[in-house]
Length: 234
Length: 337
Image (cartoon, rainbow over all chains, first blue to last red; front, side):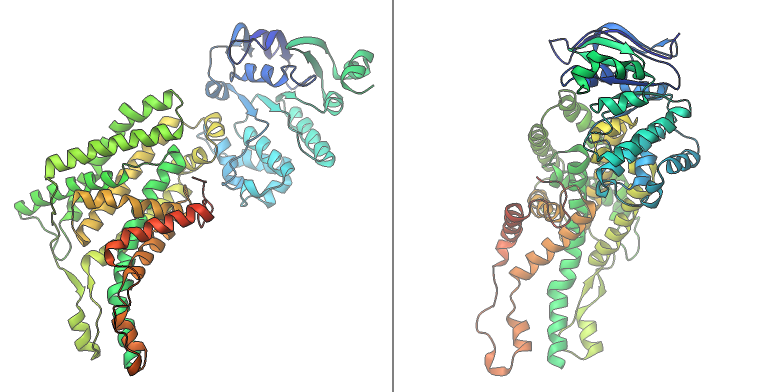
């Protein structure tokens, strides 16, 4: 059975449904990417998997366990980590304190995990005492991802991690995401930069209007003429 | 030279020492207000009456202990009664949260709703305090009155002016320093304190990190109980306890919190001293002071007083309005009102 399954998800924020029978599956250590046009329901699908949205039909299964009824906090305890697109750090607290807060639910010694995060993002080590709000956009994204990694999650969900970030930093971020996946963490990512995202993806999901349109490996989707025409600019 | 020394002693006695003591009392009150604003995200208009309630319980226990013959020598017996006041206030605040504020939290009410609810709690406390202890002045200070007497200093220095420092004034400063240091240690070095700062900074992310909102709320109210009761007791020992006066303290306390930047405890402390010094310096009659400084012919006729002491609260009010107009985030750039 696949590690993370979002099955037949149907629901929305209020009266109207945004997702219609959406299916997202990710294996252990895999990078799964959700792309699509604006308003396709990409972020909504990921929020549904995290529990920030109630789906009236469908279920979410993590490592064989049905977690559909669990609150987001409970899912964090189960090993899920979520990095929101905006407001994803504590701006008035230092980088180190941000990481400490990421590990809030853990009662054991977190210094080893913090060292691992600093190895992954060396610049954060230099700026560990600086307030997160004073960092540049790209560095702040690193703090946000680092904060999520502090719980030693099994699934890391990123909502448009490269939004508003310069191209060089974007490449660095994608490299870091590949590094994280190598340690065995499942990555689920929503991205607007479809081409670069599909480049590093093991599995790609193209969503349109709340439904799956194309599902395949990243490479196949990149070479699919219809996908190229619609979202990748030919 | 002697004139300058006398001028300095005069200012110390009537302006600096009282302002530092008053500033300490306001600072503690303002930190309580700013914590509620930063963490619970509303202006707590009941704060003055919370101070009155806490001080009332302290007074009742002080009288009880005095009747038992318990005393602390030169220090006021009220210090022994302080923990009881804090406990009673904490119970009241946790109860008011459970029965009033929690209802609105579940409905995700806007901040102004909580503000009005706090006005309601203010009226309830108003009534409770007057019902139990009455609306009149109460004095409950005992022990030594002075650390240094003006007369003693005059004799020692051989000057015309002296400075008197009351025990209550010294106590206000020392207690405020201890409380503030303890609070900052709590907020910066403990897991719970950091989680409260995180909650104040970015509530959604704090919830995602597994921080329990109920615990943060409870600890906040307990801190408010501690700060308000200590501030109220220090003020009552220094001046006197009258329920109406404590209600009126709401204005300078809010002015202090806003001047320093809402949500910022350091700002609240700075703001407390800014307001205290402003209130006293603007309403002080400088006649004698000027007389010491200037040559003989220039001695002033009138009192050289900018505003009569009746207008003390007007000073806080004016400062508050000016800050809101020109720099609403305050000195330390806290949250905007």
